[in-house]
Image (cartoon, rainbow, N blue to C red; front, side, top):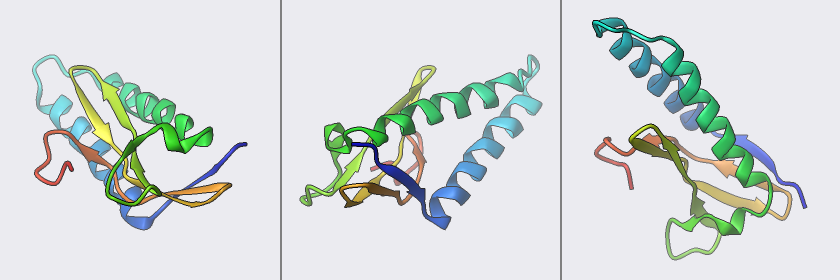
Length: 105
């Protein structure tokens, strides 16, 4: 079974914001490495691919068995992408958070 992965507008905006934060941080760094942003996106894509089969292997994000979140490691930190299993063939990513954010969980 392969699931289709959908992103809410919020999740799309989160990705843009997080990508922008990486770019901004690297531009301000004395040793700026803009490839880090690309590596972060690659890590995120790999984490999202795990949702295609079977999404129930991800951590539960609430009391509902349909609300889950993968932990997506990147460097010395990680991201989470809370999602809901909408049907047997579709998951919907609600948001994307970095572990350092206040609303990480």
